[in-house]
Figure 1 (tube, one colour):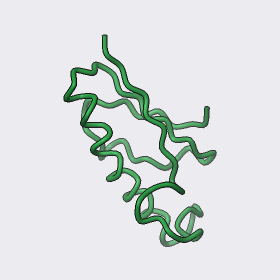
Figure 2 (cartoon, rainbow, N blue to C red; figure 1 turned 135 degrees about the vertical axis):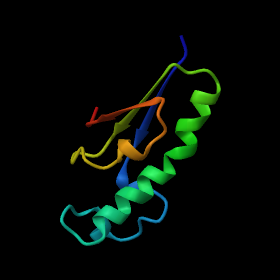
Figure 3 (cartoon, rainbow, N blue to C red; figure 1 turned 90 degrees about the horizontal axis):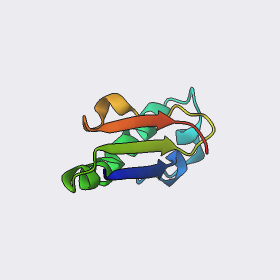
Figure 4 (tube, one colour; figure 1 turned 30 degrees about the vertical axis):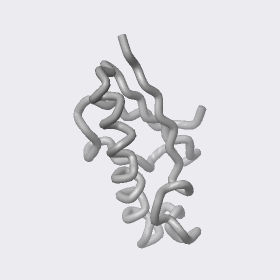
Length: 83
C-alpha cells in the first residue's frame, strides 16, 4: 500500500501576502482558503498518479479550517488539525 502525507499552512500558500488574508472573518479569508486549496492540487495529484491508495492532508494551522476538501481531488482524505 502506498500512502502520502501532506502538511499545508495558509500563511505559506502562494498568493497569500498580507496578514488580513489569514484572519477568519476577514473579507479576504475565503479567497486565501481558495488559493491554498488550489495550491494543493498538484501535490495531491502526484501521489494518486503514482498509485497511492491514501493521501492525508494535514492543515498545520491552529484554526483547522483552511483547506477546502470538497474542492480537492476525489482520492484524497482531508484531515484538518495541527500535529
